[in-house]
Image 1: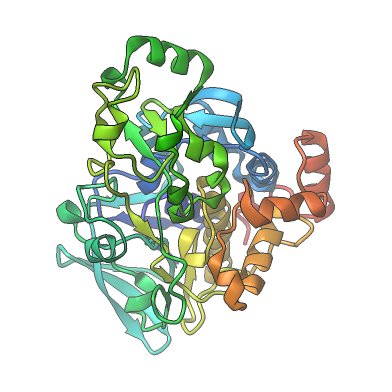
Image 2: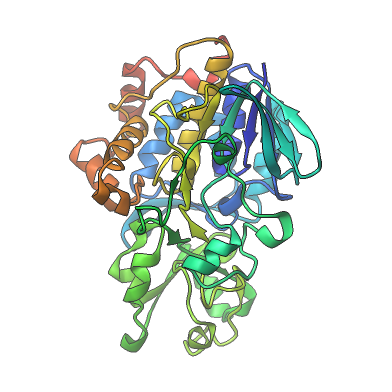
Amino acid sequence: MVVVVVGGGWAGCAAAYAAVSAGVPAILTEKTDMLLGTGLVGGIMRNNGRFTALEEARVLGANNFIDIIEKVATHRRLDFPGHRHAMLYDVNRIEPAVKKLLLASGVQLKLQQRMTGITRNNDHINGIKTARGEVIRGDVFIDCTGTAGPVKNCSRFGSGCAMCILRCPTFGPRVSLTAQAGVAEIRAGEGFPYFEAMSGSCKLEKKSLAPALVRELENKGVLVVPLPRHLHKNNHLSLKVCQQYALNEFAENLVLLDTGHAKLMTPFFPLEVLRTIDGFQNACYADPYSGSRGNSIRFMAIAPCDSSLRVQGVANLFCAGEKTGLLVGHTEAIVTGFLAGHNAARLAGGKELLVLPEELACGDIIAYMHREMKKPEGMKIKYTFSGSVYFKRMQELDLYTTDLTEIKKRVTSTGLAGIFLNSQL
């Protein structure tokens, strides 16, 4: 039995690793020449409720995967506006580290293999076709193709394309495995015109900033530069996919985080205006090059799935990451990736699928998001452990904690400690 994962972002990497950890061979296909997708410009973990969720995942059995991320951390227990005890990882070092872990675990990587179609037998997928003309066979499949772009949507809903981290002009547009399987996706603009959104940050080249600013940024991990009142960018906040950062502090200041590059916490900022600010006279965008005007457009097509992350209408298809719903963030992608990969292995072994209990934040967010998305008002919201409505819910339900002993006790009480390491499915 073989699990085939399509899409090598955080969700896809976690899913493939979880499948082999459960004793089932996994093939991970990725259309570009690098893994991690938006994780190559992200770099933020453990902020607010993500601390709890990541530690739950560790106790569930994701510890080796999490350890690799922590080894390339640039800053720990960092506070910045609206967020506490964040960990920043180095976006320049993370991809080789994850790739090495996957290969060592036995995951078969197929880079620069863009899916173009599928082969199937009734309600079962039995292979994916690639742009190279190859057919990759498998028994269970996981859609981690994401919801961003393609370029036409970045033009329709955003400001065009100048080669963001997804690099669609080079490697081809996103192709959804769920759509290829004939499943009707929840699509932006089709009765739900309000959930497409821009990615929430840009990267600035450190060498283009004043040396004094870079020294402070690297020393503290965060740099908050007040903006003159006439440059306040409140109109940007509603555009951000990451609504946990839709706070006034991000409209009234330039907030930069040290993730190897200088991560600018805004979906865009006009370069000619940015260069009028002291210390930014020579500022240059590293990603996207269109940082003056826009960023990638995400949440364009979501897969209908249940809380086991099994896609409705196909017997052997799961999904993870943003395909599961209006779920935002690396930690969220890793959690759903591990669940999808583990359940793909369970299905391959003829075992009952796992649904994470709502006593855990990792289980509650999936169930809560799916319930809320059935309501029109729920489709206007992004769900994340780190802010917006779900972090408030975590606090109200007493799910949020940084007490490692309490988190371990909570997971252990469900009987699921180490479940993702169970290779006897």
